[in-house]
Image 1: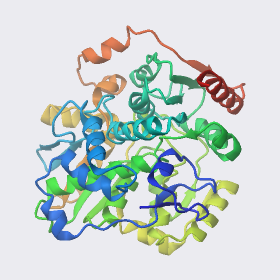
Image 2: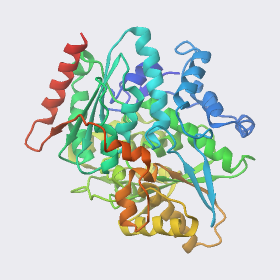
Image 3: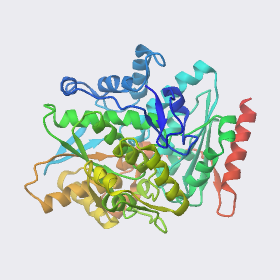
Image 4: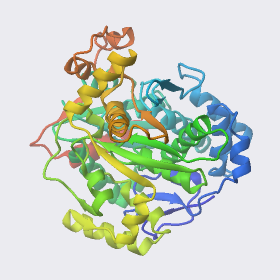
Length: 474
């Protein structure tokens, strides 16, 4: 299996090379040169597999035996999921009124990012220790990615990680999960801006190809292919849990920010799994607007909401989705993205928009009022707590029940994070709660971070930090 850029000028990369790559040198992001197909009979034969057993079927389709021997790959997968708190890894709660919630938050940092990043951390450790090579990982986070990325690599000999978080724009607990990590290879910055703002200096770092090569820069945001790859597993697992006979379509409602999660679902569909998707978003509705109209336009500002990890106006994985839906038309993707990067907007050709809408069959925009009402309704009806991001998706399910009570569609809502990280949202929804002891511990731990203020040169600060790290490591 080899990998290429969506823009066509970077090709024939190994999995190891893809693992180290953030943005490709041509500005694109990576995907497999070919997407493997799963035969219908094979898919059905996997219906009784556990999540981890299924991961051991899917991941080798993208990782060549000569890069990681199968026995070693299986060991890495076992290690990755050994710290999850439930044996099912991603259990599905089947609640009244046809509400099925797939819980992706039982990893070390209580968010779905742990599923992929636990594996990414194992892959990095395998290759880097083998090569005796040091890697600098640069991560921008809107909330959950930062802590999951830190947890995946903290204490590793061959990795340093620099994380930028939007100060005051994630929950207090999300921020503490990052700032209380004291390992020497973890470097956290609180940025006076939005998650889109902090992505700008990160992308500029990667666009300096000489600097990127000199300092072995990488990213494990959802730019990173390995994350997209591992996330295909939970979509295929969801399908098999909900439709083990493999004779129907399953609809998955995805709380959506940068579109990394739904991109993984689309890859799973391209592999032959009968899935369709609903992108549920906050009032930062660029994904909904783009899917419905084909107009990809940056809004004037980001609206802070109760679901901060989804407060994004540049969902960069749309580039991957357009690539897949265009049949891999690199010239078109390069043209579209150049126009977007030059002007802040682009209109996608209608045939591509139509193709996207056959996969992302609906969108849903949830205001904070809808989030509060959904959290309260689910608690009052079922004594089941939703995080605010998951509530955006469950809000769609309730909307569909009201609009079409006879709807018999098989539907699963992705639960992206544990509610214990979002006490502010519980208060806002008037839901009684007791602070989880794991959360309480965070408030007693020493913090380590630096601030990036409005009047400072964030790009230069990043470059200086990376150069400082390499001096120490040498």
